[in-house]
Length: 282
Image 1: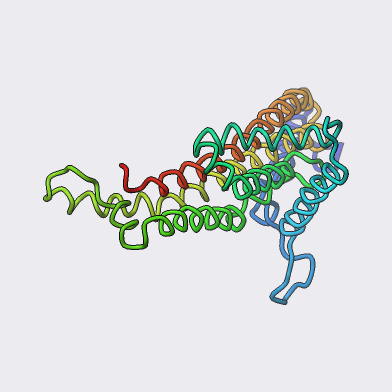
Image 2: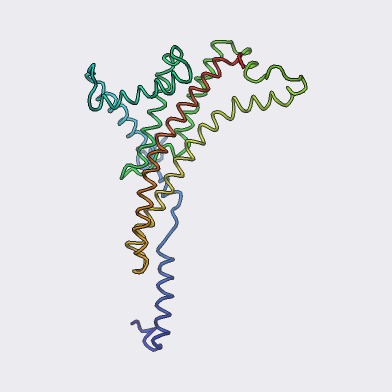
């Protein structure tokens, strides 16, 4: 017992100790800050080429993607096995379930390289969010989702402009046929915003928000587990298995989200290309 509690009665001393314990508990637990999620530069700081932890993860996962594909197809077999088999399953999925399903066989084959690149880039960059030691998807920051959205935006507008010419494509995209002329005053701005502004915006925000939300949830679950085990009062340690189980369960859910976000991004890219190609038919 400390000097301050030595002269107190036993109940008063115990009350003071509980108060100190609660005060210490509150002092030791800190909500994560933005720098915990997005730390400052770690390489080339102060130069135009500075790299923070998130950029290094992005570069790492890009090399992993390229390395996996090179290893899978370095000596392709007619009957695939091992890594080649896994890679071919992924490529066939993109080809048949996205490209050909949305665009048809001929057009799907034409744009398959672009859509497959988008799918696997999103997939691998997302996957780092559940890799121990990396623990975050670089798509959780707006830069990479924005780049991918711009690529999709340029692709579908290129398809439309190439087929119809700029003016015809713009008119076909924003003018709704067979409506009273007075409604065009309302519909043309709505169609313009929907087609040329909201599409890249929603592609960007959907991917970034989902991966950032998943990262925050995993951080909170596993930080809570660490806190309950090592920093909290003894009676709070009983909560650590629950937060750990919740974290592991959410990790499995995040694996599903990782795949779904890659699928949705690639699928919408294909849909937008299809809409641009048939802009005059709506």
